[in-house]
Amino acid sequence: MIYLDNAATSFPKPKEAVEQALHYIHNIGGNPGRSGHTLSLEAARIIFEAREHLAHLLHIKNSEHIIFTHNGTEALNLAILGLLKENDHVITTSLEHNSVMRPLTYLQKGKHIDLSIIQCSHKGELDIPKIKRQIKKKTKAVIINHGSNVIGTVQPLGEIKREIGDIILIADVCQTVGAVPINCETDNIDILCFSCHKSLYAFQGVGAMYIKEGIQLTPLRFGGTGSKSESIEQPDFLPDKYESGTPNTPGIASLLGGLTFIEHTGLLNIHHTEKEITKQLVNGLSSIHDVTLYGSHDRETGIPVVSFNIKGKLPSDVGYQLNKRNIYTRVGLHCSPMAHKTIGTFPHGTVRVSPGYFTTEEDIKIFLEAVQTIAVNNL
Amino acid sequence: MIYYLLFFTIHDVLRAEKILKKHNISIELVPVPRNLSSDCGMCIKLDGDLNIVKPLLNAFEMDKCVSYDGKEYRSVPL
Image 1 (tube, chains in turn green, blue):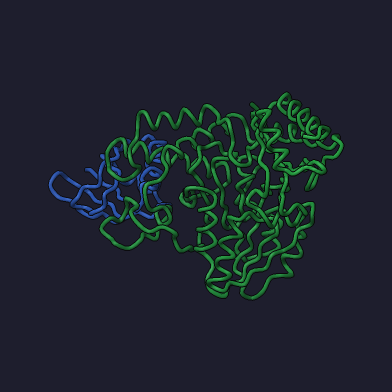
Image 2 (spheres, each protein chain N blue to C red):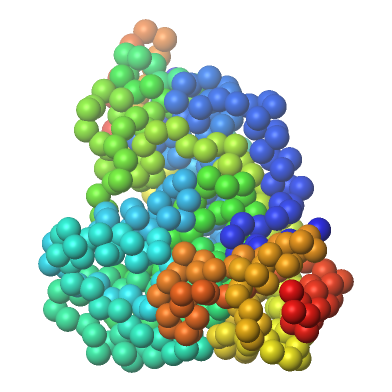
């Protein structure tokens, strides 16, 4: 079995993630911060520690500015729906995932926000001065996909923030967090949204976001927080303001384990290993006749996400043939129709290959041999 | 003298605990006494010198601090 779908969710998970989650499930089990007994307190401690480790990874001074959500989509929805009001103008790019495009389209239709979409090149390059030219008096936010889930290109967040000044930068870092260094302080990021089950190695059902001090969002969920229980009004302090309801504590425990794994292994080591394996993948695919690779082939700055097609074959057929050989990729539009329009692969999409830290050279070798066979045979 | 240090969030309780333990200050996390707050959370119980603790918690926005001499609870300014 060769798993090459880490951009959808990482697999396998490091043993630290599994062990932390099992420790919580077997020995703790309490509802965090709710009940004042030892098990409730121990559960709260796991969440506190996960927040502290995330703050360390992302260079965030106060960890209470990190909010746990149930996935990256919920984080992006909280950022977009919680921030934008009627008549606000927002700028985004043609590489965005539907977790950004759908809430924006919903607001555009229902609340009449003004939306500008910057067209990226077919290689996924974003012309940053173009953003500045789109800025209007009512521009509230710029939303940027940091690492493309279709072609793996990475945009320079710090440079974009410098260009837009005081306008709020919302960065979707679902594909990059844990895979490339992110520094909220030096890049002056306002809102960072991500899922935790990809390169942070948590189980599914955990996302998170960072909200810079001074930015007020309308919560998506109102309810119990274990704090200010005498009041029927939502608290306005962090992180409770945005975290009503019982969190996914076993998932957050796995996140704590995942973060410990990253710290022990070293983020730069992970980044380097994934870069090397991606180079092998890109070089191999480039040398197969009839294979078209999409996006930039500069693998110095990218992430391990590679899209390709075989001439004359549907990506779904290629994916099916790979699956028959127990090689798992993801085919189609990857929830990003606009990104596929940008690279010219709409509506059929591509075969996306996303190796991870645990992918071996041998895995890629077997994968490349399989693609070669599929390409030459009329299957 | 015993002091109860009340915070707005469990996050801040745990953050304060981490800082105080780093400075070897002996504290205990206990449920918030019901006569101090109707909150259902935890607070820090300190059996010692408040003046040593105060500067360490400067950066916190605290709910309240209450002293207890065995008979009476008194609000203490921070």
